[in-house]
Length: 183
Image (cartoon, rainbow, N blue to C red):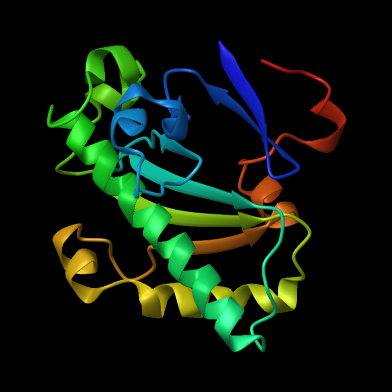
């Protein structure tokens, strides 16, 4: 069965229901949500002959211009916090520290080996100009604590900042002609 859903004015999908979790709606998150911000969803991509890749995805309808320094800094800090908290929550669910993974996580997200899994932190901004993507990506990379990079073995390029057009190319958004289906 495939899953399609709307976030921040964009239609995400079509994903296998065994590989996506709208973690912000999970009982595990609801039990800790006070003072804990998280991203919109997690998505597992299985890759032949390579480790599975987990995408932690935050969707936004807009972003401040990088020249608006204070607002931009707050925005980046909030997104970074959500992405990191979501990865931590997923791992806590997987190892049984919070929630009931068998009930809340789809099959592939429960079964994929954590030790080899690669992680990607993804921000998708609806309608954002291409020329402003790199400054947001750079700011997010700089805001990610070095300890988290090392502990999670994030690798050299763990962060992706995409607009809706790029997200469509990366198969995170449904193609426009297919956007009439819902789940």
